[in-house]
Image (cartoon, rainbow over all chains, first blue to last red; front, top):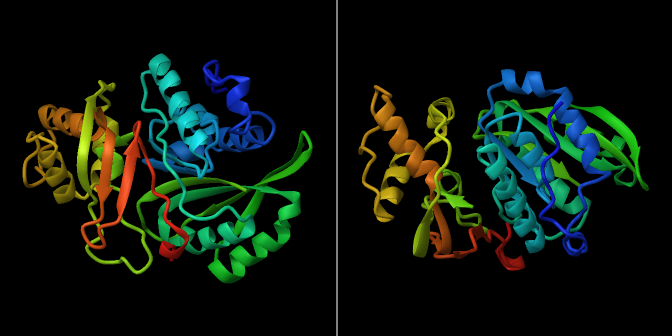
Amino acid sequence: MIPTPDLSHLTSKDYNLVYEPAGPHLPLLDALEADLETLKGAEPRICLEIGSGSGCVSTFFARALVLLYICTDINPHANRATQATGRQNRRLQRRPGGIGGAWAGGWDGMEVTNKFLEQVEGLLSENGRFYLVALKQNNVPEIRERMLQRFQLKSEIVIERRAGREYLYILHTSGRDRHRVDMKMWHL
Amino acid sequence: MVRLITHNLLACHVKGCNANNFPLEFRNVELEIREAEFNPDFVKGFLPKIEWKALVDTARQLGDTSLPEEQPEMLDDDFLKNLHHVLLEIHVEEGAMVCPNCKHEYPIASGIPNMLLAEHEIA
């Protein structure tokens, strides 16, 4: 069991501006934890998280795997929160923490996801793994079909669960093309 | 955090800017050195992902001349420690990264790079 990161530096004021690390994050953390040994075996070097919010997922994972974590979010408050969470926990753990950034592109649900999926195959390394957090209303069977037909990405549902008001899916797919990013997390 | 390890992975992504778009050039930077725990396995493992010339040139522009022009075959501790310092301990806190090709400027504020593009610049 990986210890939960210290988020005491974030207040309710922050949570008005970024997603609170509850509910939707937990299934992703569970999926990553379940795959931890496999992930370690693949010797990844880089993890790219798109939509990092409070930074809790990457920071949590940094406790188990020493990687370069690149976190992006279109929301500048989230960039700052991610950076702060990384720093807060690096002090405690003495490990490389999260990195703030920004994701280029508008926020328009599936439109952005589609654009991203076009690039996934080229971005993932040969042993790369890609985790996608999707909501039921995103039409998961359709996402999987499109990933397969348009992008030749075979996916599986690793977790499917109600989290608060949302019904969430964690999809997983593996890269085949050689490139420089080893792992990705993507929140819809 | 903009460290050289991250900078080494960033290229300009403006629509149509596909050549000579790497590495981005640092401008008007404010640096901070922050000690990080030395992990030789991490540094060694990351080496194959590094664009060596871009890293050495950028480090030199920022005033660090500890890395050799050519990547050495023998990875001794001194070399790995220098590499560790260049990759992970030099933080660019303020300034900008400019594309050598299209001159697009990606600002850095409080250590966070803004890679967002305007609508008409997105591919």
